[in-house]
Image (cartoon, helix red, strand yellow):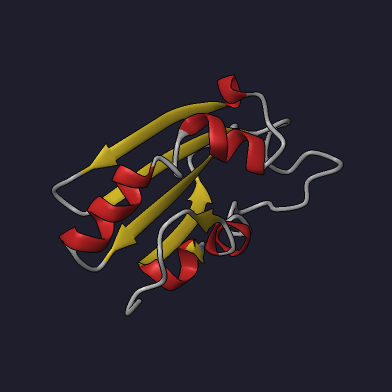
Length: 109
């Protein structure tokens, strides 16, 4: 197992309107991207489980082969700026995503 952060070129998270947070995951090369995709470790259901969400809250889960990446859009529990808001700008999900475990051998093994 390796963490997503060790495999990616970039992980970003940001607001996608007041009710959504968008996460973009980019891999530097096709080989790493294909290993992750083929491992079955990064799916809508597994990401939902990782964040303790119902899978329906992940409203977009796209794999983009042109950019060696994934786009994941999560519906917020409440609108941005609400009374118990913890991440107004949606930038806090990249940290937990960088620790997400992928079931492949470490690079160089």
